[in-house]
Length: 178
Image (cartoon, rainbow, N blue to C red; front, side, top):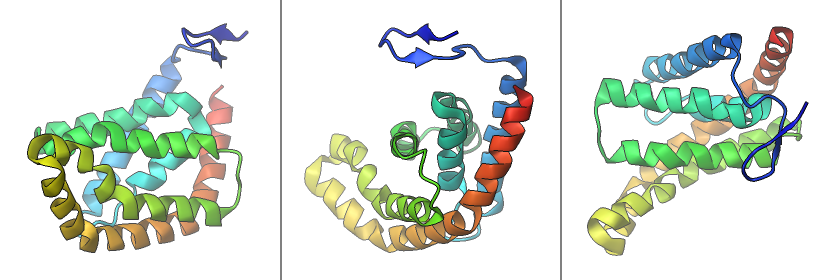
């Protein structure tokens, strides 16, 4: 039976089951562990892939593993400006993935992930505008484009190779849990 939220968006099950709590905890930790394991590679990470997978398979419940991942980042690395960015940049990617979640083409997912990687520095600019003004944010963004390029390429390749098989696997496993 569907429940109407405060925005009147029908939600099948607004609460988390114990299995979902365990699953989302494991997926948030897996995302964090995979990023740490790949940290030797410059700006190449699996987090974008995982965020898109979570959004397409879990819908709005994707926020649980995403923000668990963000919390683990804060616990390990402490509080800094990039933590503020993480509070909204992963949400932006999740919203984009939710908007096109019915699309099956691995090329769309690779393009979305690559575009997100290229836009990552730009998406972080609001925080830098707040602390140093628009010119500071612009200089910071332009200086960081050299880091956004490998981020975009890495995201594109990872999503192209892994999104479709991991989406099928996660969808199957999640359906068996229900």
